[in-house]
Image (cartoon, rainbow, N blue to C red):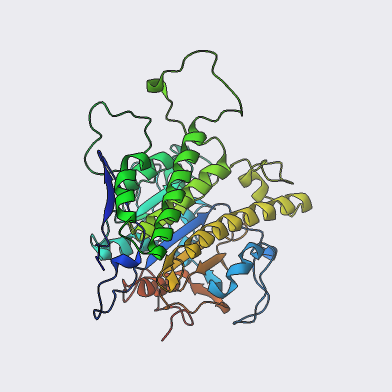
Length: 442
């Protein structure tokens, strides 16, 4: 059987789309197939959680998911849930900014009004990306839904920029995040060469490579044909959704005057929920195509006051609700917002699990973290951080368990373990004392 490279792409006039994993990419026998790539992602939630609704009941493999974590019931065997981790470096300073910027660095940021920002370290995700050293077209992907917030929070004397970043490539270098799903899409799939002059802007990228796709399909076996068809359907759906997100119209609507295609706005999806889903789809596609193996996603910035009125039973903004002062109704709404974040996490996990790589899935070959930099938003509590890890990173992580550690165990120990599982081990990270016990398969 003819073989093709893992780096093969579908090509068209001025465009290219990466391919998913296909059996035809495996080397011919008797050469042993290369191991599937491992992926690492961190999804970060602002404003903490309702703590009495987060922690599972029971320990070890015999545990029951809490109400907030209940959307993960179909993934229980894929989860590693640690309790009692904290980021000691974030214990001082304000309630949000020190904790957010130091979440993946486990260092104490320097208090600044904005001119001399310094997190005093490198974030765990960027360390992993640097160690991969150009293995993928994109070293890492940093995504979010809110633009960088500038100015000074006069309540605490910190620049708001600190609340806009969790990824740091160096002490003074926060990594810019992309918040426009369409730009992420183009970054993932467009070829280096620009579109030819005169090419219609409104032609979808997938349409430009369909001829190449049809030719490739004739060379594939039945299993690969099905996998390619499913992948192209996913890409088509994304392109259609991106177009609708930018120019939403009611069913049956017709313009009362001619529209100029050149005047098409470059706006963002208007709905927070849709933008989040699009960004999670981008992570899934990036991992499926091996465009990158490292990603961070911020649901919003620290101190986010995103209005969650779109959720049934919620009628306010996130940060305001998180300062619940033990008010029963605010606590109820707080938990609903937390659970919504977990539902989005489950959505991504489901997509990754559906993407097959031989006998395993992309989820099996990944470590996908969901976490927050503080526990209770009302107390700004840095102890016992809410964290979940899904996926075994190719069998390295001991999933299907809830482990309760000694109080105030270093968060950095978990990052050391995940770096090892990802294939970029380090002897030490920030204030770590070594790998977190019980995480890695021996």
